[in-house]
Every structure is written in structure tokens, then in C-alpha cells.
Image 1: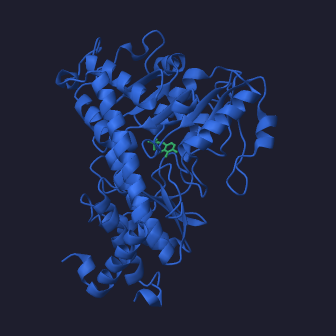
Image 2: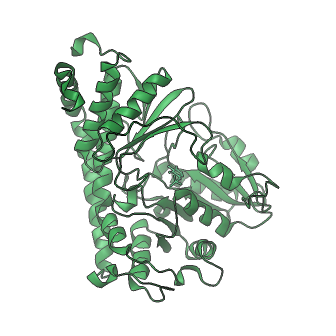
Image 3: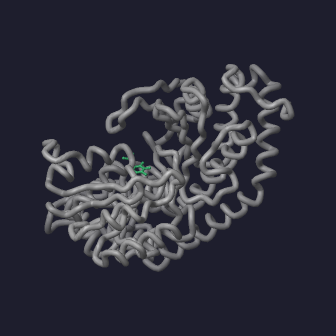
Length: 430
Ligand SMILES: *Cc1c(COP(=O)(O)O)cnc(C)c1O
């Protein structure tokens, strides 16, 4: 007997709450569907323009010279992202590795990388490193780094950015998604304004966007509004839940080539690289990605609506526009955080019987608890939740290959929280 039936009354009450939230969010759901539909057609048209055929799915071995499936994949991605070029590979082991290749590709000793959206995502701290740290990090190679923290209200601090841009500033870094920060994510329209403004200050800077979790949540991608270089993970949005590993980089032809030289070797770049048996899943995943991203975003909207109804602070709010998958919910104590993440895990089809516990994950600075009952290890377009165990106690939930799964994930987590007495539902919902 599944846990939700032990207290059937509570389960039904939560289902009722979900039904109310769905009514409230009906209009928000419709606009998410609209974006998904338009992006789905955008992807299909890119496949058509590049005459994607069944034989492109075969893959290659050895050097992978003339792997047509790989070559066409790069063109399809460039087309979808509105970029001059792209490189899409299973050889990128993670989002961090992909971003690292992009940055090492275009930066040289003496150049400066300036992040204007505050401290970047945790796993990038060691890529940036420290001067003389001996790890081969950016700063160890003599690349300079600085960042301008966001202001209290989450906006960019232009006064400080203007001061921070110097003749050696080569790359401006922008992180679109909130990551593990209690701040707003940046919409593509906001990114467009950032590009215009930094280029007005220094015309030849390269603007880089960490696009992780952003793909297909809006009608445009950052490379369609003037961004020079962008990277993301295939086990997040654009892999559509099917890509088994990998990443992509899109941008200007010269920047993408520089990144490709870093992934393989100078002079080789994207011309080699056996795709083995990965192509069909990468193609089909891209085909599905806009729809699945829409399902996940609707799950996030529902989660926000329900937690707000129960008195919790969420980011974004249920009715705010979305530019990534991530739903942050702020809890009062670590126990609530842990119970929430465990509840998400309990709702999984895979590993629902495994109870996640906080652990010191490589690349992260605090203990992290993660719910990842996923088909692809760590695949976070699938329903998943993460929470660094630190104040303020914020859980970050994302994904759901189907809206229904996201919904039942939220219900299971709420059930766990209420049933264990960690939160009380308001009287009027009884
Ligand atoms: C996930 C993520 C990364 C890193 O990707 P990994 O695949 O976990 O290495 C970087 N930046 C942001 C904003 C992310 O969400």
C-alpha cells in the first residue's frame, strides 16, 4: 500500500488543494502551453531545413570523420538557438565541463572574465579557481576574474559594472537561471538589455550566457538577442529527457570554434569525435524538449501556487513570468527542507524506495540533499529537487517529464510535510 493511503483524508485534502491551484493557474498554464507549442514547431522546422534523415541517427566510431549526424546536429542546434554555429557533443561530461570549455576557449592569460550577475553557480567556483592554485583553473592560468554582486532587490548594479569594465575585460558572464540563489532569474529580454549596455561601454567584449535550465522556457534564446556565446547541459532542458549525457555550446562561429579547440585539441575542434550510439536520443530529445520543458514549467507553477496557499514564500511566484525551470520554496527549518526533498524522491518511478540524505557533493560548498529518482543519473529535466543545507532554508525543485508526475511529486512532498507535523495546513482548506 502506498504511503498516501495511510492517511487518505489528508491525501484527498491535498488533492483538493491541487485542484484549486490548477483552476487559479489555468491562464498561466495556457501561456506555458503556447510557448511550448511555438518552440516545438521552431525545432521541427529546423529539422526540416537541415533535412534530418533516419541515417543521421547511426553515429560513428573511431575518429568520427564525416559523421553526418553530428554535423547536421550542430547545424540544427545553431538554427534553433539563432546562432552562427553550435557544437553538441556527448563528450561534454556535464554542464560545468561545457561552460568550462566555452570560457577556456575564448579567454587568454591577462584577459579578464567579469560576471555581472553576481556569484556564479557553485560548481563554477573551482573552474574560476584562484591564482596559483595549481589546478589549472582559469585564474591559475593567469586569467583575471571579478564579479559584481546583484543588488538587494536582485537587479544588476550598473554603477559598479561600469567601473569594473576595464581594457582587459574580455568576457562578460551572465547566469540566466537563479541556480542555488534566492534571486530572480533573468529573462531573455533582460539579457538583451544587458548585452546592449555592456557593448555600449566596451564594444569588443564577448557576452557569455550560462543558459542551464533556460532553454525553451521562452520564445527566444539568448543567442537570438546578441549574446556571443552560450552553453548548456543535455541532461537538462534541451536533451528532452532522452539524451543520456552531453552539452552544447552555441554562438558566433569564431567563439564556438575556440570552444571546440578546447574540448578536443587546437586544429581538430569539432571535426572529429565519434558519436557512437548517442545521436538518436540527442535528436529525439531535442524534438521533445519544448513540450517537456512546458510540462515541467507547469509543474513549477503548480508547486508555487500550492506552497503560497500554505503560506510559504516562493520564487518565482506562481503568476510571475518564467525564464527557467527552477521553483524555489523557502522553508523555516532544515527538517522541512529535508522532508520536502525526500517527498519528491518518494514520488519517483525510479528509486522511490531510496531515502536521500544530505551529503558533501563534489563541487558544492555546503552539504546538499538531492532527490533524483531519475532514468538519467542526475537528469534534472526529470522531476528532482536540491537543497543546500544552509540558511535561509530554500528548496529548489525542477523538472518533471510529465506535468502529472510533477503534480504528484508536489502532493507527495506536501503529504510528507503535513503528515509528519512539520507544517500545518490552514483551517479553511480543511
Ligand atoms: C546545472 C547548472 C550548472 C552546471 O551543470 P552541471 O551539469 O551540474 O555540471 C551551471 N550553471 C547553472 C545555472 C546550472 O543550473
